[in-house]
Length: 290
Image (tube, rainbow, N blue to C red; front, side, top):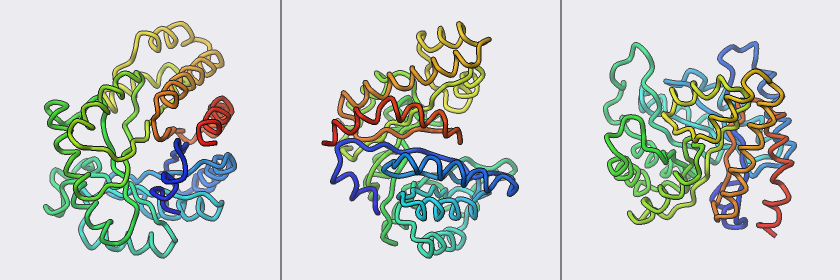
């Protein structure tokens, strides 16, 4: 089922994300994680795509497994570092496996590859056009605090508009930890004529060491409240885990209360964390959709 169709029938969607293993020996473990998450009946599950397509086969295979578990799959696909022939091959493979939804991403430039292989595939809007022509429901990424490579937020929004004009059906945000950042961002993109549904990307912080990694990866602003939690419970793993889940739950409830169309949880392949958050918010989401 296409995510655009699900959006027509529900006010708020809940989805999870998993990433394929880099080592084939961990493949079955990832499938097991996906199956446990599918048992929660999310509206869809997304599967990431390694830099330069390094996990392409596993992305397609895990997405197909998710479909076999009765859950719509959103397969990620990047264009930078890929050739047009490679993308066409992957698209064909996805179609054969029944995948209808793709998150179109530029992707990070792999180390040792200073420029894209194909100059016509430098930006995600080109990929969006290709995928729309092939009949996919297409999602795009957005950055409430600005893309790390953008000079400022306005430039970032202008670049986002290219993807919207190319036919993006919905957007999923990079992780953020201060909801006010998202609300300000939504106001700004709507003022530029961007009105597609936006899914809020939530990353539960269950150990204090994650904070420095998240800042490095996404340059996300860490609110004083979350910093205090990490400082207070850094030496108590179980307490930190519980506090991190509570913080993410609080974020989600506030977002749902303010009309956000979707909650997308970056699970880090930890089904137990997603399960606890699900139990905390399932009745709330059900009430909104009833």
